[in-house]
Length: 56
Image 1 (cartoon, rainbow, N blue to C red):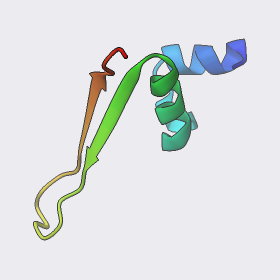
Image 2 (image 1 turned 90 degrees about the horizontal axis):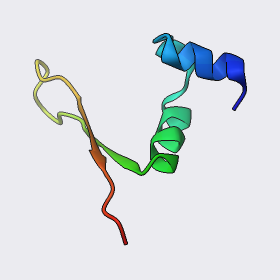
Image 3 (image 1 turned 60 degrees about the vertical axis):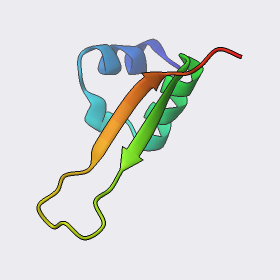
Image 4 (image 1 turned 90 degrees about the vertical axis):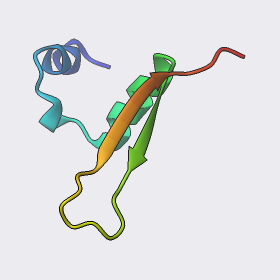
């Protein structure tokens, strides 16, 4: 990852990153993300839970 990309990330410009790229970064740092998308509730919001991965 280039210094300019790290700078974008550290200054909160996350809109410049795809979800896939962010998932890869979390994985490399030892974290896991779980997405929960509501099925039938139009008023419910999606949830993303980030947790530390279990050590093997």
